[in-house]
Image 1 (cartoon, rainbow, N blue to C red):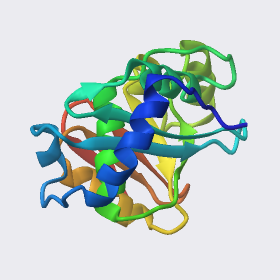
Image 2: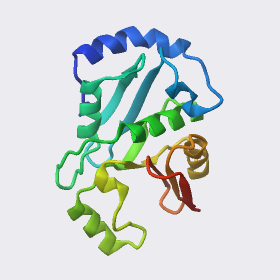
Image 3: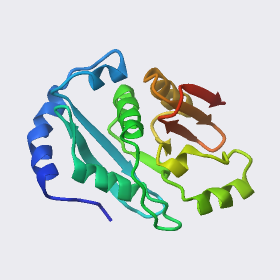
Length: 186
């Protein structure tokens, strides 16, 4: 299932398609956060639900509310079907890291929002799940790319210097969040 919404966002996507090709490359991934005239996109799919999302969520200095709603729904707790507002700063980090890696493939999202019930269940199965996980606040995502290693993804996310980056090489994913700048894992 592909999530789509043909409204203002759809019109902006058509307009912005040419801007994406012409968008400048920045040495600091978050340099574009200070400017205007830019376009931010997030591309993901979920192996759990079969859903895909490919949306422009920011154009010329403004978040697009309908696109953020789509992202919130896509990143919901699939176990409980609960939706939470995802912190746009996390989406910005994901987008900036993706852009730095210069890939066209979408992220595979393993985990976005987690309800307290889901987080407790996962904690009972793994010591790697934090009791007060930022996933429960809608401030974290666990992501994978087939074309990039965990180390490459983590370096791109860390280059944003804007949140936490966890490397989970054995499980082949990277945790990105908008909390304090820190890193962990191998």
